[in-house]
Length: 208
Image 1 (cartoon, rainbow, N blue to C red):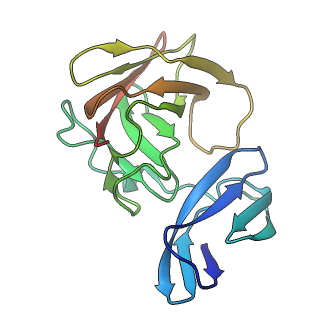
Image 2 (image 1 turned 90 degrees about the horizontal axis):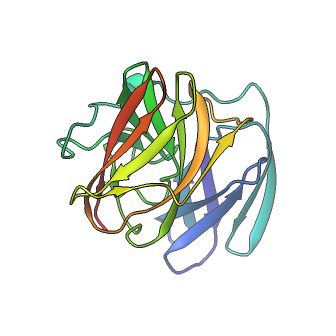
Image 3 (image 1 turned 45 degrees about the vertical axis):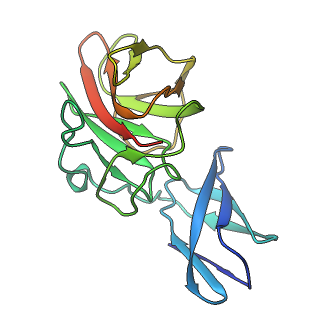
């Protein structure tokens, strides 16, 4: 869908979206004309959404069945060691696809932090260095999961917090965990996830 705001405003212009599950998304609206600001957005969850922008508030209801996420085949090419290349991402859904022994490794949360715009772009991340940043994971397999972020200098960073999500409307295969990491420096970061019978990696090129 396209979210449009009409009014005489000064950039930057943002829309705040509140999902039915309480998750908030900050969406950058780009100038279409002198008084129109737009951005595409893919609703991945059915229910009541609240949109706030430019002092206006609107409530919209997204009907089930849920909008299907873009297929994994759109997330190419897969990332490689040293970010050659970075893992593929989508600025509309905020997702990054990694590779795993079984299926794919998925993370979400990068809507406003991807340097590029579009459905098939490298995961180049901005405005995260030194900040606590939430990353949600999906990984197939069985048993407990461990997650680690490996910095450009080889240092390993455990999550500042980690929780298992029993219920979720994010439509990707595997079990889901929410975590918070701190990216301490720019450069190529490896995000590694591991379970008893599966493991996966993805590669983020942190710019700032």
